[in-house]
Length: 260
Ligand code: ATP
View 1 (tube, helix red, strand yellow):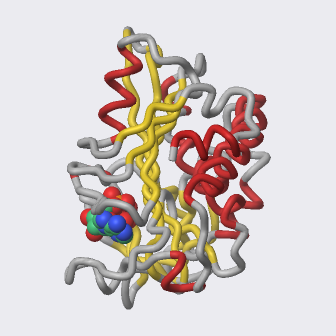
View 2 (view 1 turned 60 degrees about the horizontal axis):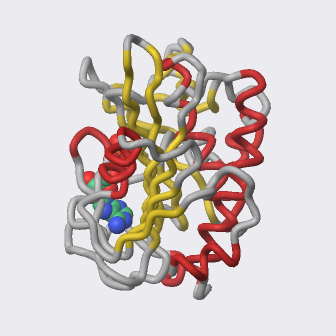
């Protein structure tokens, strides 16, 4: 896969070095380790299989061998740590652009869905030193060709091939994602917010103008998702008219009848 990928890369920075694993625990873990050992901004870590793929808040990402794409991108930015969470949304738009499939939508903040089921998850992790970013790792798992999922995932997981019948090359897809991300990261860096990407993100947002249930550990509530603000928080209009600003940190959002 590595040679194929290197042939297809058209980027200057993202993917400037590629670390390839037949099988690893988690590409996010490997990227963080390599970062401490001098791996550079823009390095990419790709695996055919992960034995401990990560989801948000300690959850796992099922990563069987062969059919799917699992990678992490290492960044060493010089902006403030509170900006890093927005990179999840930048990556979500990059993946959607690269896929260029009509039915792809984003479920705020970090999942891509087709027909209401998840095809991609994104996990951004950061390491700090004295309140400055040491590195950021953006992990991406995409169900490219998987047809069989664990029973507990069947209702909410699917793959690109299962939904669209499209047979994609993993190398080409990764090369396209890195190209899109390189373009969007440059735009993001100018303002360190999502002002230039907000409209595109909202176009893709599956939750927009739909009733959602906000699973906030301080108390669940329902409302209509209206979009995002320039820092990537979800704007939810409650029944009585108040507009809540939902920060992704501890919160999940669900549709009222299911996953979206
Ligand atoms: P949230 O809305 O909080 O992001 P989430 O369920 O989407 O909720 P994530 O942390 O984004 O959570 O992803 C991890 C979850 O995704 C797992 O708990 C599991 O339910 C689901 N999952 C795990 N592996 C896969 C996969 N290969 N494809 C689709 N979904 C998966």
